Image 1 (tube, rainbow, N blue to C red):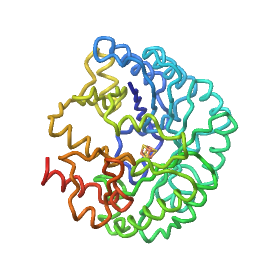
Image 2 (image 1 turned 90 degrees about the horizontal axis):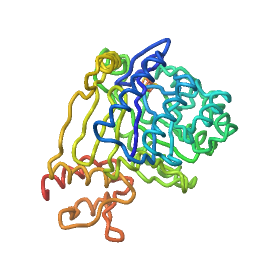
Image 3 (image 1 turned 30 degrees about the vertical axis):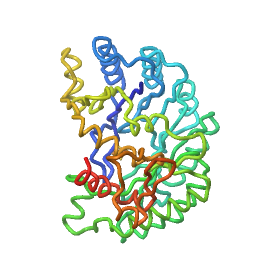
Length: 365
Ligand code: SF4
């Protein structure tokens, strides 16, 4: 069992972000913790999580919660799910990481931190509306290490508009020099109604360039592999022993329970999701109503397609079965290959994951 807790608060909205967040100068920590603990308590009547092997605090910006609030959340989740030594991840923004906070997080049971670094270029960070600078990320990694949290991941965004003149190689070099054991990559996408979408509509900036996307992705793959990382999933690279157990569970179709606004849960067949907005979620909890906004049950065909898509995202790929015969053009282009009875994407194939899965969809499923 895997438990996700969504913390929706951010101090401002980043230029590319369309996540379900509540922008707050002051985080209503007590009200939030009370609401989530009530939801956790209500699981007794529903799909009780069982033995949690991972707990993930994502957002939003979970590191905006005071350490004592995080401690209550982690300890309660731990107790309710009979967890023994779970992987406990906190998503954190670099400006929230001080040595005192890092020590308090460690004492609360947090043993993995995913840092929203994005870039080390201050001009780029400003353009993204991030509230940290590159030096703060470097200090944050050191503070986490000093507090005993070695398992740190850096998030980096690539494929930025040409006019920013972002030096991707230099950012990769800086990230590698920090020697964190995990790096996650995100290609910039333009989501509707974000500041970035509006800038592009009025011609103030250009949409991300597809060639740059492919070049920078492949450059990261080469560079990080040479540094000793393994790309164990299309967007995630880890040094040996440092794969994210929580995210790996999503990719292998394991059940999970989500708490908090907009959180999703999955029992292996049915996916449910909570009310998106913090205020709507808080009111529903206060009035004793269900916080589930909706649900969908996967058909066998949807289940199979999802397993194919998720499996091909990973370095393990999918078993070569009659329904998973690779199409000759995919092999000829070098986008997929067969190895040990499994079908796996190459880095070039990962760039074309959607069209690879769609080609199976049309011809074999
Ligand atoms: S910190 Fe993360 S969740 Fe918050 S606005 Fe920025 S990208 Fe979105």
